[in-house]
Length: 187
Image (cartoon, rainbow, N blue to C red):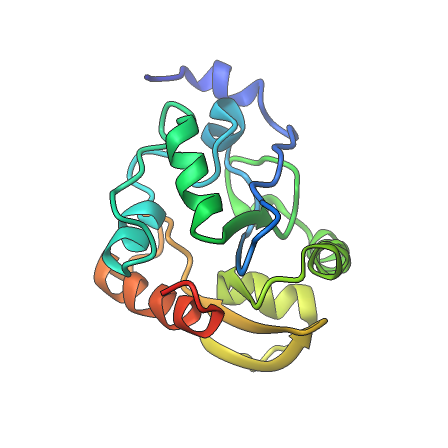
């Protein structure tokens, strides 16, 4: 499946639904949907995104999910059965995260708090240190478990799985995701 630039641009500012089930224990928080994600309606869908390979290597799921053409019902069910949910810090789709304002991140943090209060996961894993720092005003935060809690949930910052994040490999992403998953009781 492929999209032209014009087709992708038509999804700018679109919003996709959260993937959260009633037994959510580990809630991953992406920065915001990319245009490919908005086009397919599936989180972390852009080809080359390392989110699902990292989930597999971390032992969170038993197979690599390919969401590039949309989320298959069996894959959606697998995530929900494992207690994994996905939302975004900022809901609107953009081509790049640097198109978002600090105000959008702060408003997204408020929305995230409301979501966590409703869902009550064990762990909230924010995928992106810059997004976390901006949203919560914690300029010195580092990757890993945070002192902050959202409701009763532990807060973890994990590396962003985008291919643009050259500092991390699938293996280092998997190690960070596994730590958060262990804390959540998912693995």
